[in-house]
Length: 413
Image (tube, rainbow, N blue to C red; front, side, top):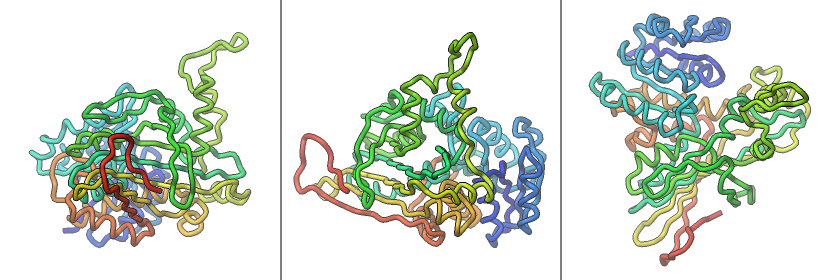
């Protein structure tokens, strides 16, 4: 059956999804919806299946009207809009996909995830699927974690380590919204331990991780969805963490220690100043169009390195086993030269598209609301094979310990 897909929000990720869907034989029409009609219209001109519409996501009726007849709703908006877009998907009888559960103002990540999962029975009753958290992290890493966990007799821990060492000679600390980046880093991360979710201080629990081919890098706890959904969906799991590192993270940590990421006004020479507002005002925005990306690259790279590691540990055949899964994808220079995108937009956008591809090719048999780790093994295998075709591959390294130990855990390079 030919399908109509609505992409709500045609920024970097939504635009990438729309462009990829244009080549899918099972897709008949792509409704590119955005508050900025010029942004959506760009894809209508580029893609023969695309139709541009202006939609204010704060107005549910506008979303309802624009999405009538669509089979799948791909929500590329900030997570604050998840509730209204999910409600529209239910009313218009559409399958649903989004990129993240949080951050949502006034709700922690546990609450943000559970708010979506609370609609599980409603989507099931409607015969619909709602796949949440579908980017690279969360998203791709969830698929990898589940594949690794399925190899074990007993699961103990899952750790996600994302190291971003992209640093141009032109000062650009973040390749996504600085406001979002600083806000995320100053937030209290959620970890999962012994069946409970715990909030920990920002930049908590520094850990030196020895990445294959890169060496030892400092990583800290970071606010993300994975420990939440892992804790809810992985049976027997004892611990789950998400850690982040890199020069931008170190910059943010220094600002945090100085109070510069605070949201309460302070008096400065008779003026009232919100530190975070000042920092965000002075931080250069992330380049978003090919011209500004090229300009930044033309000034050269001070550092270009990175690592994405999914580490899953448990028992197999009576032995303690560690499965290290490394994600291979283009860096900034390669991603721009080949695709005209940043490394961030490439990996997140392609990973998200592949979940849309699962939908339009009828590879998802589950109904209700669920994250990627809940997908069936056949869907996960299809996903990873298609990812390899786009240049996103995974190397798995297995190590084991012959006898149990009562202290520490097995870690491998």
